[in-house]
Structures are given as C-alpha cells and as structure tokens.
Length: 534
Image 1: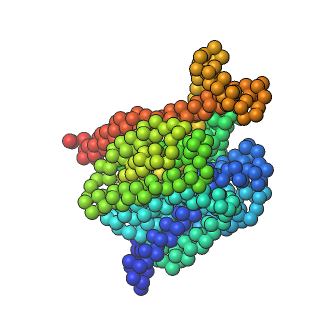
Image 2 (image 1 turned 180 degrees about the vertical axis):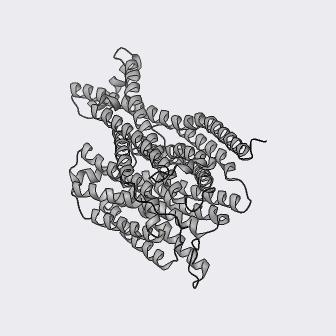
Image 3 (image 1 turned 90 degrees about the vertical axis):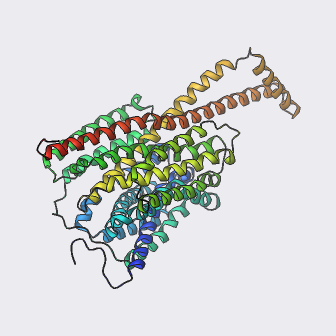
C-alpha cells in the first residue's frame, strides 16, 4: 500500500464511500447536537443543577475552550493515529460523555463532561473533514464537502434547535444528551465497516507541549472574555481586564515561541503562503460571525420578544435548513459539474445574507413566523453558497501533508468569528435596550396627553375588573412601563439585525481589497521566482 492509497480493495468502492460519508455525517451530527444544547436548554439545566449564572457559564466556557484546542491538536494527533481511528475514538468519547451527562445533575461533573465533549467535537470535525479530502479525488470534493457541511454547519444552525426544542417541551434536557449516544454508536459502526483513507506520510514531530500550554491559556482567556464580557460590562470588571491582558500576553508568547520553533511547533505558518487559504481564513471570521450571530439572534428574538415556546423557536429555523442544503448542493453542482470557480458564488452568498438580515430588521412585537419566514429562508440560501465556496477555496491548494493543519486553523477562525459576533451582538442589544428605555421613557411623561389618556383608560378597565382605584393606577403604570421596555427590546433586536447586514456591507470592499492585495503578492512572488523578469 502506498502512502496515498485511500482504501483496501475487496469491497465495492461506491458502497464503501457511502458508508464512510454516512459515518462521518453522523459523527458530525453528534457534535451539532451536543454543541448547541445550551442555547435552548439553559433554563432547565440551571434549574436542575441549582447553578448560578456564573457557575453555569463554565459549561459553555469549558466546551468552547476545549473545542478550539481540539481543532489545534487534531493535526498532531492525525500524524500519530490513523484518521479513522481518531474519528472513531472521538465519536465514542462524545457519545460516552453525553450518555453520562444525561443521568447526572452534578454541576462539577457536567463541567468536566463538557470539556470532554468539546475536545472530542473539535478533533472529530477536523478528522472527519480530512478523511473526506483524503478519500476522494479533488474533482469530487464539492459534493463531498457539501455533504459534510450538512452535518457540521447546517445541523447546528437549523436542525438541532428544532430537535432540541421538541425534546425540551415533551421531555427534558437530559434527553438531548441521551440522544447523542445512539448517534455516536451508529457513526462508529459505519466507520468501522467502511474503509478508512490513509494520510500521506510525513515526518513525525514531537508534541509541542510549551506551545500547547501557551495557546491553551490564550484560548481560555479569549473564550471567557467573549462569552462573559457583555454580562460584566467588559473592562468595567477587573477580572475581564486581567483575562484580556493575560490572554494577549499568552498569545504573543505563543507566536514568538512558534517563530523560534521554525516550523516544528504547533502552528504551521506555511499555510499562509497560500493566497487562497489566507483569503478564506479571513473570510471565515466574517462567515462565522454571520452564521453564529444570526443563529443566536433569531431564536433569542422569538423567545424573549415574541414569547415563542422552545419548540416554536427551534422550528422557526428548520425550514431554512432545506434551502441551506439546496444551495450547498447547487453550489456543488456548479463547481463540480459546470466547473464554475468557487469564488463566483461568494458575492451572491454575501448579498443574499445581507438582504435577509435587512428584512429581519423590520420585525416588530406583532411579527409571527410567517412574517419572518421569507428572510429566514433567504438567509439559509445565502449561507449555503458562502460556506461551501470558502471551504473549497481554503483547502483546494493544500497538499495532504498540510491538509489537517489547514482544516483545524480554518475551523478555529470560524469559531472565533462566531464568538466575536455573538459577543458584539449581546453588547449591542444590552446597551440599546437601556438607551431606548431612556429615550422612550423621556417621551412618556405624566404631562403628555396620549400617555395620560392610556393610563386613565387602563386604570379604568382594571377598576371595572375589580381592582381598587389606587391599585389599578399602580398596575396601569406598571403595564405602561413593561410596554416601553418591550418596545425598547424590539428596537434593540432590529438594530442588531441591521448590524449583521452592515457587517457585510463594510466587510465586502475590505475583502475585495484583501483579495487584490493577495493576488498582487502572488504575482510579485512569481516574478521573483523567474529571476526578476516579467
């Protein structure tokens, strides 16, 4: 067997490929379900574990920190383990950790299990995507990567919230964790039956323990700051300031240490010699912010403003999954069959997402699922065109030796972009709610004719229903205050939707400028390689 062989002959090639893709897709689904449980299951978990908001935050911090570290550690692990063995081991660890989490309400144990789930999720995503690149020729990668995106991107953004909402309304959060176990077993069985691809042989390097420790500190601090900064008003809280300083120092120390390692450390800087990867890596931040930010805003708006149930909030995003998958397959067809360059669909994806967010910015407290559905479907359509294209742009020029490192770094960028996007939107909403309450409250004064008339009408209605005059007056004032707060919240969410749209309006010319700059760098490098002659 050569270093680049992908399967053992003896089983029908098509059947083996189907088993492999199905196994990797199910493995990615385990991460999708486990990774998004806190978005809708927060209240139930906090109630059963008797956790304070600060204590509960460790469930999110532990998972996200270890997931990012899993992205970065997976390339080294793949140099020591077969890709299939890594994915199978990570999937089993995910299933076991979720199975135990389903039967415990001890917060300390749940935090430990979330760290295991995070690291397993990071390594299985990198290993699974690398296996698909190794298993098939480049000509089939658009279709294979579209299938992988269904489990790694579409499921957590659309399918998982609907599934979790239904379980929360009918059962409890424990059942969400429990549902991961059979998925993990099914994925493991398919992967063990299928033939696993073999990576290209590469010189094995010792594990960069110092570099891993430094980046672990930096990632932990960044995760804490981005996930908790809005809640503590950012640098007004000393712990956030110290975490920021510590994280920045650890990151600078890591970059310096990697430079001294000269390519033998945890970070493979040679990846950025590829203009395509450099461009896609930058785009991944923006795409991650758009995906995670909108996936956070839409259910949050439905739950807090529209008073949807968890099931209704989850189902709100489900129809967009069909267009998300459809646009992934359409983009794969255009790129694989029609030979359309991957970059071609990126502007269309950006414009579509921008339009969707602009449409959502007109939502009101009277909006329903039907009013928001057109924009949500448009969002799904744009995300599919955007994500497949930047994936193919990022990894199309990488060889087998650097493939896993590129996938890990690309996913790290997308995850960090998502964290930054959600943190910025949370801060924007919090500040706008407070500012809007002040602005609206200044116009709702006792001397105003319309507010006074409304207070009197409401008080009279409550008096007719049996309240005493004084109590009715206080209740009317309270109801008016709640109305002002509710309208302030609606305006704040509309501003947040507009902010995502403006993100692309601002980012688009910047990305075009970066693309032009990278192209000029490639041309200058080509001239130097030809001895300076044009």
